[in-house]
Length: 521
Image 1 (cartoon, rainbow, N blue to C red):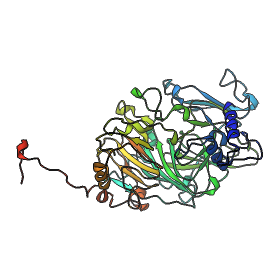
Image 2: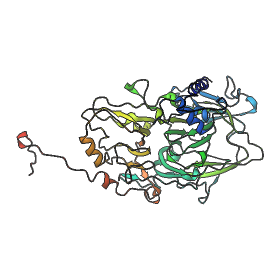
Image 3: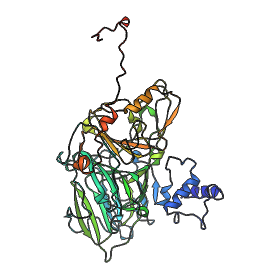
Image 4: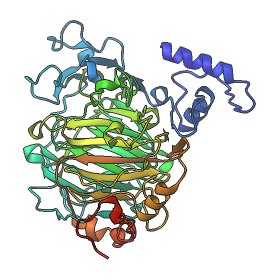
């Protein structure tokens, strides 16, 4: 409760500040700090750095604890009722309060300690207690819009550079039916590859329903609207400029805040799990610091008499459902290393060049999922961001250079303008996206190049009010029919607008300089 005590003290210091004007009739406690408005007001009072950081104290508002990323591989624990976790044993003959114990394994039992992800759950009824799963008809409001990849059958692998206009809201559908498969590679049955989705929903999931993916971990990047997520482990509130990772198999329910439509991006990771990137010579701190990751505290529902819940499962890219006579959100206590978590992108600590040249974008990596078959330093998925930052390089072309990459680069824009591309209609816009596939050339458009090549170079801050991100993968990505045609969002003139207008600036030196190879007048 030390964090709550510090919060109370900060509120008291600002209570009479007329500029902030935060006044409450009753003392703020962990019980009554429970609305989105309260959270924003208290944050503005307590956080002196708030302009573009979206730093909010949601660990108190939605029952989220700041636990740090599990880079130390130490187990964390949470109890909704004190004493729910057994002492000195994981599977006693009788668990406290008549609970069932259940183990959730995110890796093989024998995975090395540094990679081993397991959690022990203490719940009212085991997750196995449900009826048989049945396929969800395509006509159902809870069906998937498109299946996950199966050996490339659903993908169009093309070398063209692609860019999409902002994707539309869909105010009629809830979370599951809002998942539009855009691109990917691999096969979930082989636990190999990734999938990239656009989600756009206008309704909460049905009240007594839950969803999970057996295919992979969901990395969720909200672009618009607040996701109020109840997981088996507890609640998480996720807003634009934050990300959330829900690992494979964990059941959850998505509700909308104040019925505001939501939209964003998802990367589903079929193999392995995300880690913090190694820092190497950077040292012990920087980029995404482990202490800024948050996980939910235990929170449960007692609903197991005269009730019916529907459990939806994404399994091999297909949707199944099963009925059960109790809530899936009945975990009273848990401990382990396998759990959902969130991170505020405003807390990222970027590093960069302080002399010359534009460094590789890998310096902005938030999370990485290594691909061991492809060799050290290679990722099946990296999550990279381009936050507000200072540029001070001298005599340097400061935007990203022109590039061909063995990796594939999918980019999205949460808000603002990306400094390497033109904005506005026909440009790179919030809620839009781009894909530069394996070895497809890309880089600044003509206007950006001309400006950056001739401008003065005082220290300058770029990305104010902006947050672009990239899903980078060693795999060659294919695009679905929905992405290429059905969505009707592909910018057909992307290449013609960006790079075909580039001018020839080459000037042959005089013969006196000794350049005579293939002289042409």
